[in-house]
Image (cartoon, rainbow, N blue to C red; front, side):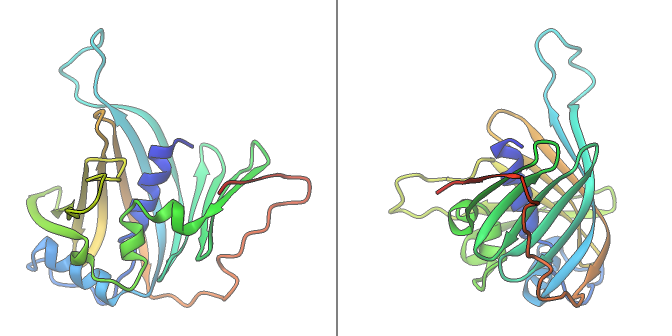
Length: 227
């Protein structure tokens, strides 16, 4: 799994918490604020597509090309815990247990572990899984209404003292809100690659067992620990 796709998943993780659904008459930004403020846990299904712009030798009038599509199930719990379980066309699982981030690849029989703080620090997940206000770190810019959703752009606020003005691996994050729920995301990097995610069957504030985010690699699996 590429760094961009992992970062995209972490960014997606940021908004999957909600309380009571809001009226669609609310602005997209207000729906997102309420969603983050009232959320505790959530789970549901996802379909994720990675797209790219056509190359010079390809037709230019057919828009972005789908180069990868996956689907699976997600579970989240504030703060800092989630499972992004890819089930098709291959089995791969990304687990954050609050202390570390684990990438499990069934085909490789390999688990890669890294500290959660380092892995999440440069993504919106660090803010939205935590206790701080969303708007302490991002400006919410109201976008267009399309496909039955009200879109909101998340613009990272700049720290004048920071050496790197933007640590995020993507240049644009847009969230499609409908009836108080995030229904779609668009993540764009500086090279024009786009990750689109559709969310479905979202269950809010579900009761989760204490060991829901515990993952132990199978016996005999290769375990890589990254600092």
